[in-house]
Image (cartoon, rainbow, N blue to C red; front, side, top):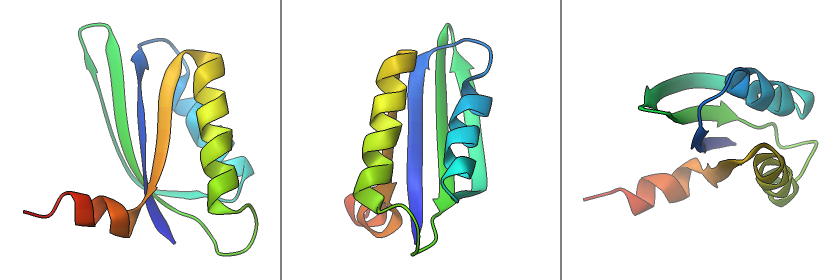
Length: 89
């Protein structure tokens, strides 16, 4: 299953490493990544692939949300098909 992960927060060293490490520990592969810093704010969007086995999607979402709160970031994951449906013209 493919999904979109978004990360937003105050810029600091190690955000990409922290998020990618958490995803890797849970068997999630990063397919594409785009990030930028706008003034002091870090923004990142990732296309990821989660295997059907392993951690359930809802559990992964909660894990990312909890990690984001601990780090002062907003980390969200959304299924690719829902993301696409929401952004169709």
